[in-house]
Image 1 (tube, rainbow, N blue to C red):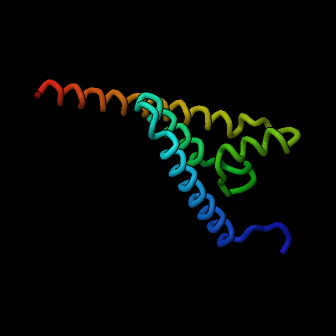
Image 2 (tube, helix red, strand yellow):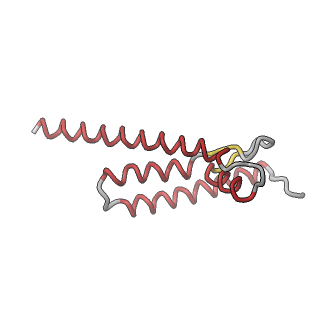
Image 3 (tube, rainbow, N blue to C red):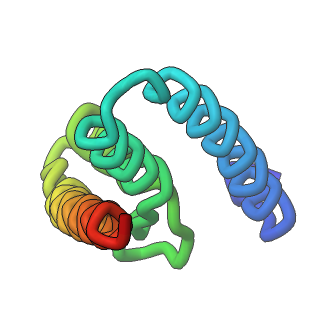
Length: 119
């Protein structure tokens, strides 16, 4: 067999990772619940983006893996590959997540202000 990963094993690996990520996100949502919404919305959004952003394993392969894992592997285990190959897009996705969180906070604030104005 060697080190060739079958399509079925690859999909099962992603399934297990996604289940684990959902578990981590549930715990994270529970841990951040006592925080103010100004803290918990960005923290929840950042962790979700960190866990669920995929990136190509390498230029020679079609497989994808979580970007943080690819970046960590490239930075620690590869000699001539920079961790920014996947790290750069991951940082960009985290910035997009922060913008989305800020927009959500703004929407919630507008909604709350509108409700208070009606009273």
